Length: 412
Image (cartoon, rainbow, N blue to C red):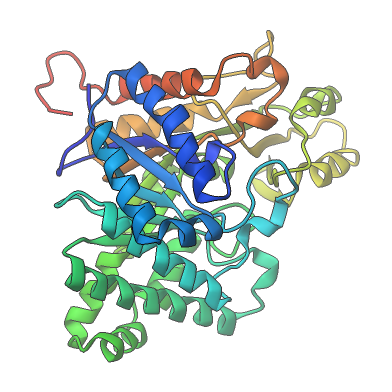
């Protein structure tokens, strides 16, 4: 089954899993890994999910480099339809943690960077295919000090929507921005995201701002905001937050929020925290990424910014308390648990499976992107297969769950 074509949905994986901060490094990854994944799946044309750092984006913007990329894509029957515009700086091999959100939407550099990504995507998009650029959830929560900061972020996003409208006028290509909620950020849950769109982005004030920058009437400006400002639903993040999928989708729909992109990912789950928990989690501790933890106990959710803080808090749990942890650590989507004994260390795969079943039955988004970016920090036992083979296995697992059931005449 092939998911492609103007009607979508389009399926790929995010190339942020391959280390590379310069355009030369990203180009090498496309040649070494993406072509192999497409070949392994037997899928052509094959969609590409680019990740471009600020440095790589500026280098690719050179006309000769952009022309060379177009030639490469045509030669291998590849096409780009989405860009991960979340991490601006280094993303592998050094401490990332909370720095991954910087520059955030409180900073003009985030706007400049995202405008450039949209410009590049418009230059690569096939005619008739919408593009998406996923981005940070506003900012890391501790950086936002009140409604004034939230409004400042919204104004930059509206200015980006004005750029996207003008880009469509110039190029005939439509690109949307997709805000990606994440634990411990300003937009943490899907409900918080719905409220942000309703209270800050889809308002008369925002429509007036867009109208001033584009010359559109107010009604057309409001429509442009809904067209160009969307949500990126990351399945790992939503599962870690104990989201109810159908409830969240209904809340987003009620706020008029379109889901432009779904990132297909799983996190870690410990059904019952006990004395053995630190030993089970030790192989997953790393100094590169934040691993936010959401602890469910007695109907309450407690959030910890990183795994060490959660482990420290567990030392004071009262005897008999039932704590379930979900951890922001992207793990291969085809793995349901880790280790021989069920119940010790599992994944949030059931949430992802539910989402895929929902996508197959009543599509949620036009863009689907597998995003297991932690291959190089996974425990060694899960790194024995080369990355291209493992990614192809992930995409195959997804395709199986998106396939229509026997007797269903729906076309993929």
